[in-house]
Image 1 (cartoon, rainbow, N blue to C red):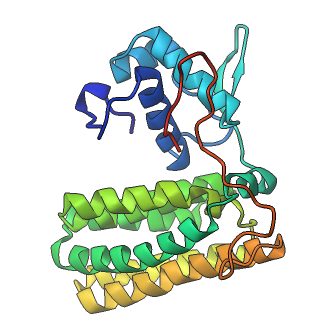
Image 2 (image 1 turned 90 degrees about the vertical axis):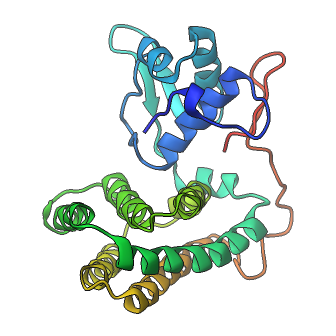
Length: 267
């Protein structure tokens, strides 16, 4: 959830508007705000983030420029989260395929370890939350792909938190943020959804049995399935994940200035 900026530690000094953009982008990529949903009002964002309206507007301008949100005017206006079509997701991945390969390798180390540690340390309340999410993703008809992804994010974050290691939790969160453009290229298919649901069911079973070895093995298979799905979608669009981006792809910065003196690493 959105964090007051006084509680956020940054490795170097960023303008307030850039920090606002980073926090809102993280919330969007983690599906805390779903496509079509309205972000909190400027006044509420000022209060929740502890910044002035100028900083909020600067952050929103960047998000709009990068096509993460649409700002609508009028009585029923506000900043609304946009759906990322495959074409836009591919554009955001330009020049970043080598980084995506390394991200998959990093995920393959971190998340199975997180699952193993969680199996030994998870409590009944966390298991109860996981059961509730599993029931929702299996039993709730008409879940959109965005809603399903929001459930998936929460499942992985609960498991990471149950490791009782803040560094692992933050690593899992950062992996998910950087993986978002790759997930955006996956088409909505019943086969993929069932595969993901089956992985969650196996994870819950291993965690309930407090079987660290099984939890790690299940997580390894689960995230490998995601990698295969992303690789297949990229291949369908002419990009070989093993080889890299197609000829002519140009690396692009995630931050593009929208006002004099404005810049950021958000994304």
